[in-house]
Length: 254
Image (cartoon, rainbow, N blue to C red; front, side, top):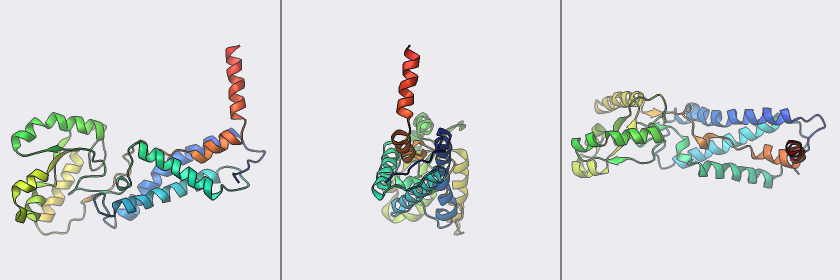
């Protein structure tokens, strides 16, 4: 049985609940990155990254639903079927707007980042020079592939992925040509590029690499937007919003 609204219920309650939901969902996803996945060195290109990202998605959905309904005056809870339906609506929005579970965990600077969409092949220095403008277009469209920054970036750097140093050190047995054929050029912001250079130098010198996993909790996309299905359900089934809308329309057309 869906929640029954009390007599003291007002539209302001729905607005307050919806606003809190929009804040809680991306905040919860970012907090899991910073508090859980980054310390554990979980990154987006790991085999199990969709599992970890799926956990983040479900946890953020559960917390957001709890907070949004806690701010409403209700006497009953949603049924399990209704809760599953709301979760499906949120996942559909998440998927349609380009979301994937692996994008919800931190990036690794030695791998394609969580905001990777497409890259450019590279075979020579001349090829790299000719693709600078293409890298700028990719950066303006998708942002830095590691941190997701898209605005206030004056110039995107063509990042070799995997990085040249890492490729040469770990893949000598399979030959440079095969390695280069697998490399791609991806858009990188200056901050991520500098941080990557430090991490590569540490790796090549045999030192512990402590800063290669990068969270991106402040870079938001449409799939970070919460779709308030429970609130819309309450709004259209237990309030007079439709009748009020009809009255307003009739007043306007008079």
